[in-house]
Image 1 (cartoon, rainbow, N blue to C red):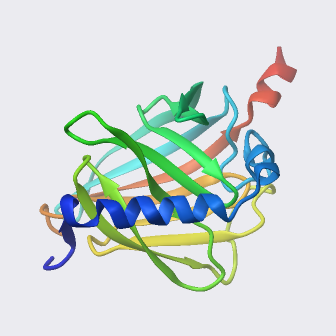
Image 2: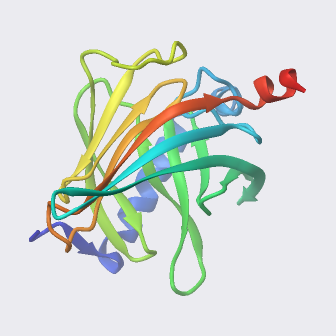
Image 3: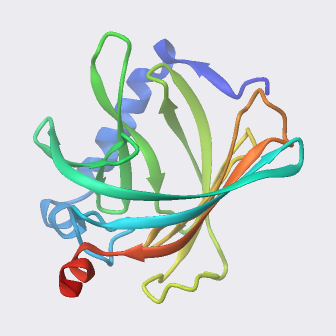
Length: 207
């Protein structure tokens, strides 16, 4: 686990500069087109829902199986940028093919950190969590997209040094996620698998 974590103080400026650079590369038209459309990397519209099956493993053995629903509750605004607030408390925004998560420093300052970058070739970037801890992540495009969802057009895997892995499916969002506690050992983890994506427009049609 050595070198996995880096202090917040030394790298905050670099992270903010990276985010600013990414934003500048996308035109205003791209920013508008990315919001709320199923063709974006993560479909963002109030009312969108993702239903997951969560399998919890302790010391290599399955402990319990749960179901949870993630939904977009409302929109927000950070420094003039439209954000989307999810039922798990996360606040995300999207610029082109880059997804940002808004996090808070202990001082209360709120700023974006890169959650996902679409890349055709393997790319490493820094992700911040907890307000003051930075972890390096690596994203790469998968050769094939093994997804039962017809909306999926391409899949990307994101890994870190804690043996965690997230699979993003373009047009759907997260279809599979393996989360771990860096200090809890490799045998205790949770696998989250998407079983249904319900766009807000489909929910309206059913009424």
